[in-house]
Image 1 (cartoon, each protein chain N blue to C red):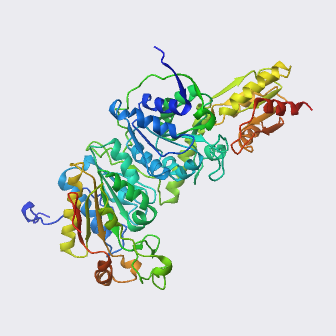
Image 2: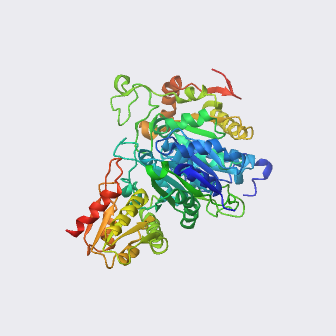
Image 3: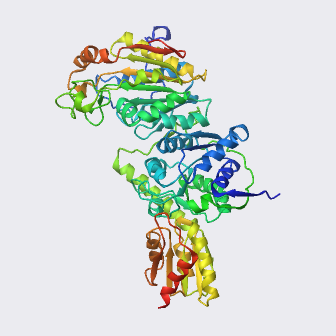
Length: 353
Length: 255
């Protein structure tokens, strides 16, 4: 039976972690995502599913606890907001290098620095280009509703284990804080199987397992990097997700994810009411970026508008997707300010002059 | 080797060592402590139950020497990594092996908070008062006036601060159950250190808090001395700042 609830995005993601059969969550408070840790602490799932919830002394400690628990081949999650994700980035690089699965949630806020606690999408580069040192990528999911906050947790764990790679759920302060009706995912059990690579204690039947991102021999380390790159190419082939709304006959397409996609959808509706053939293309995976799908959706378009709550970051991927053959502009308020549909509509109209 | 019958055997390397050549300098205490840990694991018969965490520093390649499952941690973060895996595998034996730069400088926060939470793990802490792997720079544990490559005229406490006796701080934390400072500069000290490591592993069955073992060790390469000189220098100069002995046993403070 469907279980419907009115929830904040942050609460939904926390509830979904319990239901996804997560083994552990390690976190540290930071606005606007503290409800995730608070909700989990209140639910105390160690008494129901056995899921461990622990407040770490810092984001640095939290991500390294994730590294330790993920080494056991368990489902582990952490969450933070932009400045905290920056602190975690060293650990995320190690997780990617050691090929450990985990789910990391960023309920992004305005930067740079301590910035502001208001919503932002200015962490796009950090999220989609790896973020830390070295050649690595995270698989990035961008929810645009409370429902997707809930749904992407189990999906995130599945993708993380499929690729042995960290998965980032890149949300923002709008989606994290707003309340919506959500159909809660089914409960699924915690993992019982032991991963062949996990450090669970060396039994007589197998070789010892080592979790490391270190290779002192550069030639061996190059091979490791080549293997990682092959994995990222496979993600690009198999894991792109997107949504195209009213794009078939669209002359102008807003390209937007997360909260910006919801705002842009309203702008597209307003444009249609005024006789402007506008559409919305929403990347759901930011890495891999749905470039082929965007190129197809934009084949009849005269202009693309990258709508982001940033100074223009995703616009680079949008331009690459269409080989710069269609005019691509950026629109967005940023530094914590959320644009209104009317502002997006005016930006769409600038293609007409 | 038929002359070595079972009853005549007085010593053999632990079967849990892979046989890979240690990367430590001759005269360094690491080699001794590294083998002691595997001797304890072998004697307790807990190979399949033990997970080690290696640090960044001279002992980063611990996993080359150990025939057990090992996780290599980021610099200073070993006890956070240990917390993560112990919390999801509470029935396993988990230990970290860290140097003074790793544990008492960049990892101070993780060290203090892990012990303060009373994580049920063993922390093995090698204190040689210097950064060994990067070539002999000043460490948080470098004693006053001690010369290193980044305190070439000796550690000036006016500008460089004092040596950190982190083990004394750990002993006062509620979460710490067993805290001791040992050494490996002579055979009696080696035997005591082994007993301490054994106790740190046995304590994990009790689930009463963190076991923390500091081993004061010399770094003859870093000190620019022969192994013998380095040990003598350590006894004369380091031990007054880092006196050996138990600080907390079974949760009871001894000092």
